[in-house]
Length: 443
Image (cartoon, rainbow, N blue to C red; front, side, top):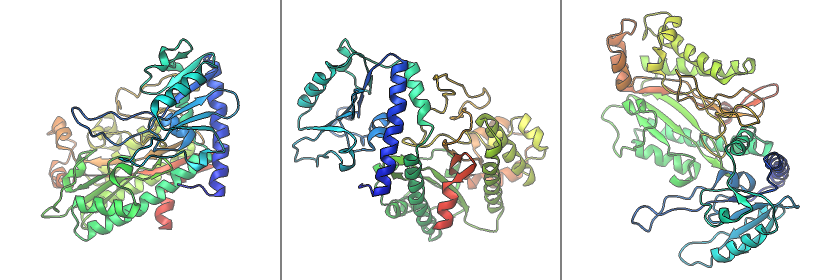
């Protein structure tokens, strides 16, 4: 996708920022350079077909060039990084030439055969002292005396920096969110018209102009009790005999950066499940409003559990106090996932468990092992906020008969599945910017 003048200026600043942080961390770990491989696909077992190609996110942060299989980026500390682009002379598949927006930022070389590209890379490597290799298929490069795989510490340090988004990255995530919101509106219209999960999914893709492998993750399109499966992965071709509820968890991409949005709806705007959806939505907005006063995401997650306990008690799903619901871990049955995760080049962007610039690893609390983010809440982080309440039979069975659960009401809700509300937010120095709410308001 071509860049306009403003985007190109942001990309230039982005390059300067990540160049500084990469070279600082390489030098701290006694490397003078790095070789970053875009990656390569592997075939399915005993087949000549492969899954869609996903480039190395380290390569993407430098290039935002997704169609880049077998390409190499060499950070040599001597002026512009060297980009070795693979552009085969092929008539089976359309090859990709070096994107125009990279020509001013890299010393670009193009090769029509992988052997020529590899030989050129090997020659460039002879001029360097100690090279860190970042890629899934090191093979011949790490056999060289001056090329090594990075230590866990270096990998963690770079992962930590991925959490802090540059203005260029913020713009792409914001744009990806706006695209996804358009898809969500189309999906809701299709649901209202009686569409099946499959038809809703197609409506989403058409509005966002994403084919399935363009999506940042497989969209979750769940009708009725399917929404109690957190990562429901199917698309029923026929609509259910009776429409009760609709949950859609779907994102979009803009220049390799992801968005991740979830909305839930009741088919009947006046039933008890509609009240639950409204209550979770209000609680989610209240949680986002609390973020400027917090510094620790684990505490934020605990507040989300308390907020969900308040909803469960207010709607008489639980008959105990909010405090008792949290302390007895009853909220864990109805809300079994984390409140959010970092967002960027990956939907679950790496670095959520890296807690400082030295690369120290933090662990989720024992009670919340699925929590993907345990860092401090700081400016320039982009993450999701996604509380929910679900009626999951396999979890409910663990506390079957508990005296503080209104089982007759729970059984009424089981066919509806569950509720999740998810926004993408940026922490700024003076507050919170909610990309998702802004995009819905502007749509």
